Amino acid sequence: MSVSPVREALARLVTEGLVVTEHNRGYRVAPLSRHELEDLVRTRIRIEGWAIERAIALGDELWEARIMSSLHVLTRLPRRRAGEPRLMNEEWERRHKDFHEALIAACDSASLLQICRALSARADRYRHISLAIETGPRDIDAEHEAIAKAALAHDVPAAQQALGAHYEKMVRYIPLHVGVD
Image (cartoon, rainbow, N blue to C red):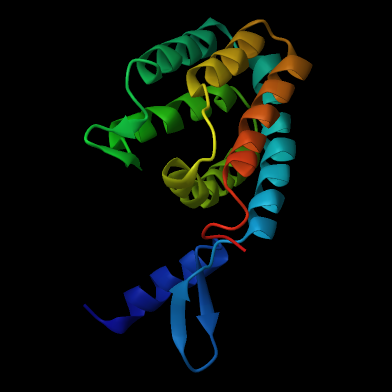
């Protein structure tokens, strides 16, 4: 393999905010920061709030069925890896992503959905560390059920509020003094 594909991959990771360049030093993983996390969450709340509004306006019974089925399979797995409670269960993570994608799947804007996916990918880093350093108990299943219930009821303000509260809890549960500035 030549160096070109590696450079191209690193350049993409830079644009996604996952890697940073240092002049004459190369690339490194982007640091985690409290400011970035708060900014990311605020942005996700606005952007995904808009996407869920569009999805609710356009969603049909197949969209509703996708939300219900993705919620059902998500709540059947533990979030933490068996025997290693500080690590994420990879299958839960996949199902979690499927649930959040199902919520906005009926949105009619490919650009908006692409932005939502990019923001979600950036948030993954924080979600993974949050499991290891959470400072309090969370009922993630109840959070997801509240979002789904509001979306299925076609209640845009309630769905946006539940989704926003869900994202804000990650900020609250990562302590300022551990691993993030």
